[in-house]
Image (cartoon, rainbow, N blue to C red):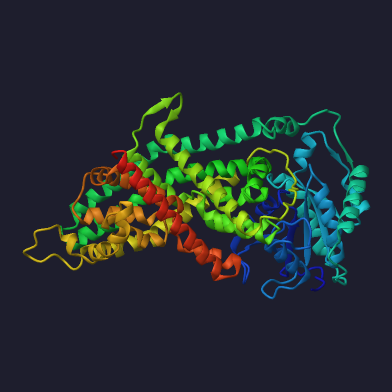
Length: 627
């Protein structure tokens, strides 16, 4: 740490953003850094590390570090440990900041003011940034920033991170601070606060608010009015159920036109290749391997983006914390903490960020249970498999106003994932934690605010890019490998069966078929499941490639499966995908988050066992009923 003399503009200052969850810290980070961001993990832990560069209006260079949200430096979770260690200078991979920007929500100042008191004992220069001050003013909340600066003993700046004009005061103060030269850090006086210390700090925060904030005279705010319905013990769960149901209906109804366009584009690409490349191995590799495999997965991108759109909007709106509150009682009966709802809901997009989000759960056993059941949530990688099989075997008919049968079945599959996760958590509770008392759930409910279009679009782009990159790497590679296995060795000249029956793929499939035959899986499915361990959606590419190389071409892969499989086999595979842990990346994250390979193998064992038993039951029951 050092003083920065006036007139040395090329010095790079390390600035860390710290604040409680839902205070607008990420929006402030985006406003400061723009597109100059890098995302990675801190060394040794899967805690997201976001850094960026910024240049003030007067040309001062800043490195901005977005620290994980925390209410205190007591560090009850891995995220909070990282924040504490960076601020105190305990991490070799991250320099200790030169300046802390403590971000507080202008409509809910209490957590930010309490945290600022604790950070004053860390010996670093502070600036308290009262963010979203425009929302507070719109609600009639008046904040005396100068008086708050006097009461806290630190500079206080108001900001509106989502508007360029709302950042001018902060930029000006950063330039002024650098021009004066940063103070040499003082001694670290911080010690872990006790419960009485935290209560005293909250009382001091309330005293400061009483002297610096004037609330409007209106009786009830919009948030209070909405919460009276959203958090109602009867209406609340119904509203949550309706939102989830609408999301799954939209996955089918809204995506169909774009999916048809993508399918037509890949069909046109195949026709162009067929007209340019002579018939033979090269043409087969491009059309039956690359195009059929990658196209069979990319076609489901619109459905995945619709799912992400709902999740991003609900997060920005402030509804997710309410959903966690509503689910606390239900999940408590299954032995889960209400905070587990957010990681589990995140797992609908991908189990990996869902598992990582479990770090917000303080209790280690609750966190471990959440991690182990997160892969049971219906992640976006399952959508290509589910929509393929539902589209092929479930008729697209309407069974009520705005109620499609296919969307209803999809909703049932998501519900099956949730119920199975709760059942596993309940069984774990009965086996290992029967006599333990549940800790009460305490959390701040942020005020509602309109989602920012730029943030939602950025989130959708990041997820679309990640999916397409995956399609262009993992899925493309798997499709080519499957094509090679399905093509070689080539059939002898006197062959009487399809050429694929003589290939390595057929050998592997027939080797596994006796194990999977009781659940209705043929050798083609067995071949697709093996590379599907890399990523669940690869199974769709594998099936498309195997049937394309095998010469079965009835159009789209859904039509092929409808002509080749029985209903019992299709339902059995759906049941398999509800439970089977076919994603090596997820297993690797489980190992890293738990710090032990033991729990990874526990997840593999119990999920494969559930998958086989569920498929066995579904297949035989469906056969018995004539399916």
